[in-house]
Amino acid sequence: MLKKYPFYIKSTTILFGLTLLVYALFNLKEILIPIAFSLMLAIILNPMCNWFAKKRISHVWSIILSLLVAVLVISGIAYFLSSQIAGFSNELPVLKKKLIELFAQLQTFIDARLNIDIEKQNEWISNAGKSIQPFIGQTLGTVVSSLLVIILLPVYTFLLLFYKTLILNFFYEVFAEKNSKEVGEILSATKKSIQSYVVGLLLEALIVAILNTTALLILGVKYAILLGVIGAILNVLPYIGGIIALALPVLIATITKNGFHTQLLIIIAYIIIQFIDNHFLIPYIVSSKVKINALISIIMIFLAGAVWGIAGMFLSIPFTGVLKIIFDRIPDLKPWGKLLGDEIPTHHKGEIWGLRRKKKSLSEKIVE
Image: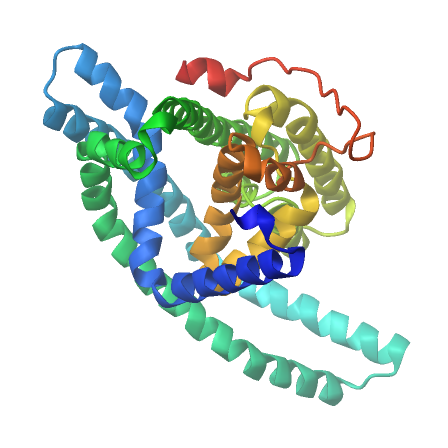
């Protein structure tokens, strides 16, 4: 029915709906963020629950065992990171002293070459610090909300898996009975694609962490394991995360080593790793059907960060991928799915795009 109305009415309606959606997401973020993380975890654990169910284990115990496996894995990663951070914190005084010395040398260099005296530089730094204070408060608020997520995550995940059939039946009953077959096909295809996409992201992060750590160990960078894992986590944020992940080991090498030889090698190593990630890991491990283009990725990261903070930035790309999966399977929304994707057409509207069918990724094969 909406297609019968002029474009300006349809576009106004869509913009108004999006505005209401963003307003609701912002004001309900304390409630929705734990649910969003729980939904992603439930999607990841669903194949494991099905596997336990095939072993004739009851539905409740299948969910409990799957959650226990997830808790053990997450706890192991958290313990590993905390032990690395503890070792890093022990040397903070030395690192801080070296950083102050380097900063003093930088100020002297700026004073000599750019004729900006040190007092003026300190004034700028003081003003910048005042502008950063609200951001620090927001970050502390994010930490508090993260603790709430940790508490509610297993509860929501258990309930989502327990009521999985009820939720799926809801989608069937919402639509007309004559569309039940199409709804079933969309739900089934979407579930498999989402699972393969999320599993692919986890496998990609693991491989990138190994590559980062190996490169930093070879170059003799301190805290190589911690920096490698953090870089892999930040890699979930395309482009922006990669820049931050590169800046951290370069900064540590600058503080702990003399000269700039190591920093240059780190940059070269990370460029090579990014090349491997973009041209081999993502096409063959992550589901290639849900690749998001660079423009949409950056926009979604900043929009999600403005609405949900740091949690939103990490959730933005997976959920944008989920939206693309859904859009690609609903005829009226296919143009939006193409807009989100990175397939650049070689023909104008009205011509056949003729995209080749791609091979299944490793993550899709694992899910199947």
